[in-house]
Length: 360
Image 1 (cartoon, helix red, strand yellow):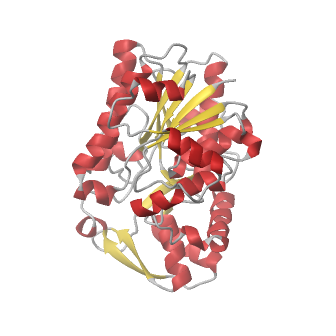
Image 2 (cartoon, helix red, strand yellow):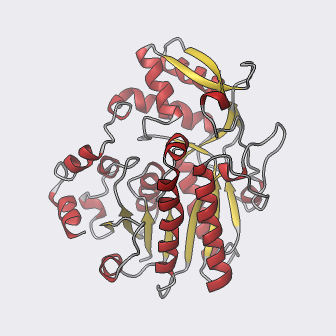
């Protein structure tokens, strides 16, 4: 049985990848988390992480990667074949307010994980999950390839680029089996309510106005390539499968992009249509309202596509299904992500989950 260490397992993308691994493989999943402002153990509860059907295949280890992984934590983790490093601070606005927090989480935390990975015997792959934002804004008609030059516009993007460069340097210097992925804007179930997708759904349901970033003239909304979290998981499992077949992916980079570009106003209008409400919105200058933000991001996904990968679900299928899910699960639009809530959560789960937390 392969053993995968998944950092940030209770984060938005992390828990979707954990669910995909548990459903599609026989691997054991060791989840690592410090439980911070973007995570919640309720995500793991929802995917039945601690249920009897996954007995013997899951482990939860509490650790803050800003501190080195000590022998006790390393012993709790045990042998590892794959490391999927998703733990990160991700919100651009917060990075502008508290840049050092992002340096500590995304750069120092990554360095501590890399140092730990060097001690592992039998490590086959370490995947560093990066972001499209490291490339900076993309002019119309431009889609960045994996090895294009970085030009971060905000502290979040810069911290992710810093962690990525560290990971690649460990590949070059120490021979660590590193692979880099850049993902575009990810949406899906159980996303933090501060993110654009659930924020629009909540505004539509409540009849509130949503502010959408545009050019300074307020004539053109910003655009993104959106990809569902399950499709991100599918892409990662595909890359690992290729690696197991002998395809060289170590030391390389791969863009995980959406199927097509959509401007944020069109996305908001689609969401409102599914919700069955009229969209109330206002276009605002993207830079004056949120310095450090970019109007357009775009990555070239040709490389992964040419390898033979295809998303299992279309963008439209994923989009409508996700909106419907939030309509029937409105608690995830108003979720309390405060640290006080985290402390309550640990006592709300079954005995197995509580025992795991007590051991950490």
